[in-house]
Image (cartoon, rainbow, N blue to C red):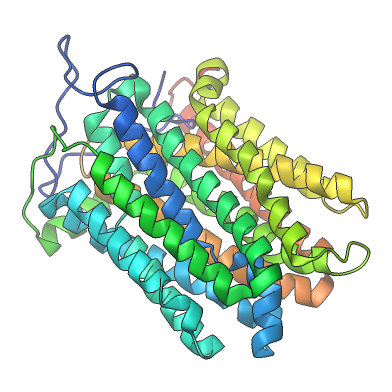
Length: 430
């Protein structure tokens, strides 16, 4: 099975920054399901994913309350989310380079430590400007974690188990996003949004401590020297690979949909005809459980449908959910959110694991570029989704999401046509 869905060359040329990962052999010592340390490693990175999404999107379900407290519009309040995701997108590449020198585990630990420390300060922000600034610092701190985690998995897990392992990390993202929003919703209804953010900070501290205690020491990492010139060569190499660029675009477009929908949905549900209280709105994020299942099942989807087929299924599911969410029926809106969430997390798991398999060298930088595109999509989606909602209501936000979904289809078709034009076969399992 080719490493990704569109049939472009599967590897990037070797560069100086990153040593090659060990080639698989009959006596491959990397981890596999059922083997020593695999469950412990999976649970540790699952907890890291929980903490990352709980912190990164901690204000998203609280945006109507933030707007009311500070007397600002939805588009201004949305910057408490977009500033965090935007800062992460900008710094994920340089911090991934540090992981090549100092190790994946060290960088992930440092990132979580700083992020949870800032998380304990966020509830005391005296103004929306200070809140946005603290959230930007928090996002910048978290930038060291996503790409380093995927590079750690690519080095320490056998290739056949990589999609499932990354799916578990992504599942942690969905659990963190869900639990953070549910907890903040009910706590905020009783004690206000500041108390809600304080609870998220404490939960993230516990996850960070457990992560550091459980994550096994890497066995297949070799430090590389820090060289801006070598880093530049690595980045240029990845950006010159058409397959990687398509995967980056797919990640950004999927996250544009997700960022727009979940930034704005709280405002829609507080308005007529729903007029839901904050605690109930927070509970709506239970649909993230669907994302946990779909991301963890991404490996099985790829095995059955191929990467291209799995992406098309994810796109169709997301588009169907967007259309259903236009209904004035709360039940159909919730079903729409279920489908959007399932499609997004499945597509993200397939695309991100394809990046890790495609980059034979400079994996941390390849993953960092994907994460950068992914979180820029989140930042753009959150801001544009709020602007669209302010201008034309929920239907305009859905329209933005459908445009992004159409973009995913276009990019995938473009890859298939490029493969055919170059004379390469594009098998059904691709």
